Length: 153
Image (tube, rainbow, N blue to C red; front, side, top):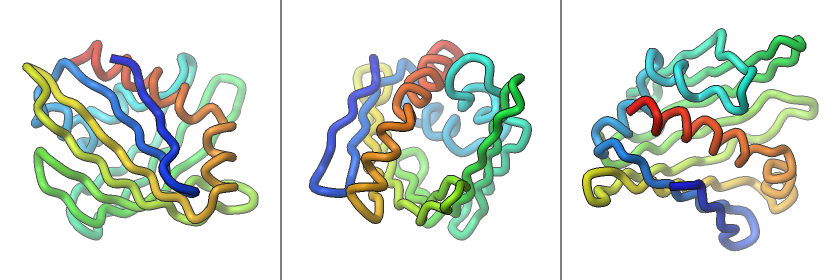
C-alpha cells in the first residue's frame, strides 16, 4: 500500500495509493479539518497548528506545519469541485521565497476490494516546479502521512 509516483508529460505528477478504508471514509479524511490535523503531518516530529478546510466550491484551504526546531511552512488553497465520495478538485500553493504558483490537484477515490484506491494528479505550471517539488522530499512526507491515515482508519 505504498505511494506510487509517476511523471506525466512535462509538468504533472500522478500519485496513487491504496487505503484500507472505504471511499467515503477516505474522502472525508481528506476534507474534514478535525481528521486532517491528525494524519496530514508529514514526517514524525511535525505538527499542524493551523488547519482550515471549508469543503465547498470556493471554500478555503490553509494548512501550517511546524516542528520543534522552529521550522514552519504553509499551504493556501481553494476547493474548486467536490463530488463526495468520488472526487476532489482544488488548487494549492506552498508559501515560500519566491512564492510558488498554484497547482491544480484532482483526487479521485475508487473502490478497491473493501478499501479505496486513490489517484491524484498534480498539475504544476512548469517542469522546473515539478522537479523542485519532487526534490523537496514532498512524496516522502506524503507517504509518512498516508501511513498515519491508513493506521487510523
